[in-house]
Amino acid sequence: MKLIAPKKIQSLIAAAAIAVSSTVATGAHADALRAHTTGAGAAPNTTMKLLSRYAEDAGVDVQVIEGQKMIRSLLLLAKGDIEMMTAIVGQYARLQTGTGPYKDISDQAKAASKEIRSLIEFGAAAMQMVTWEETGITNFEELRGKRVYVGPGGGGAGSDTEEVIRLLTGMEPNEDYESMRAPWNEGMQAMRNGQVDVLMRVAPVGAAILQEFGLSKPIRVLGFSDEDKAKLADYVSIPGRSFTSIPANTYEGQVNTADSGTLKYLASIAVNKDVSDEKAYALTKAFWDNIGEIQDSAAFLRDLDPAAPFSGLNILLHPGALKYYDEAGVTVPDTLRP
Image 1 (cartoon, rainbow, N blue to C red):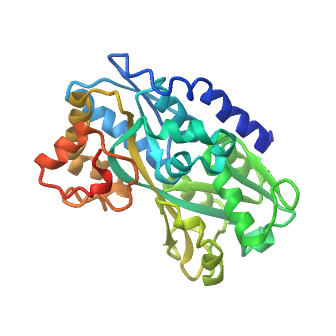
Image 2: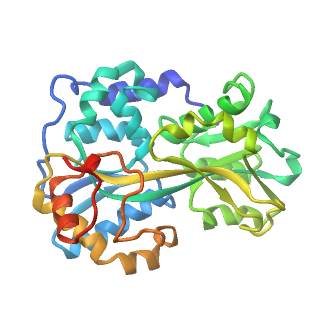
């Protein structure tokens, strides 16, 4: 197992930030829109692929590039090295304030945030901490001395997981517990092989990628108590973060007899502000014109309401997207109008 230290994460961000302060955005310059998204199986990946399918029918070519680190991709989007991405709202909030993973490049991060616009808001799914029942782990305090897969190296998921564990328990990664950072597929394989005691996966509740574990032997989902939620009050004050729960019996083989409290994250289809109004309009329209088929393909998107599509988005809308919503008679918060 290859562990990626926080300094390595910062170097990845810094590499992407080169020249952002002097020339933040170079503009969209390709016929095909280059779109970064997460690894296969995650909600942002599925959403971007569905949008690209219907965008093609609308005459917009989207080149989806999977398996990217979204905290780095935000900087690339601002610079114009890509034109689209699935942006996690909470990570954008950190970019906008130059905090969290961007604290070492705070001024560049704040400038970069001004080069990004949004098209669509959607749910990026929930943080799910799963362990084998045989480990005997029933709460976060019992992670001490254990091996925990927290997410990909250099990505926001791993940083968020370690932050949550720190806030709940005071434990530091690779001091009080072993933190494994690796691509999602390697984390899943490590869980199958017993190389980690606990796996974190951001996925829709009930996702098939987690169901496989309960089909082999009993699993437990680690959940937050009311006391835990109080400790996370500042964490969930960041835009795009909120509490949700994973019901008992969500997965085959799940031993929980009560619902497990956890976190859910909001996301957006974001674009560089220099993407043309015509393309931004066409992308937004393609998504909502086909929302029925899209929701049939992705159950986690079924709570999207075309008449009320905004709940916590914090990225200004692209003028092309705003034109669509205004034409559709949708109420757009003033905070999202450029």
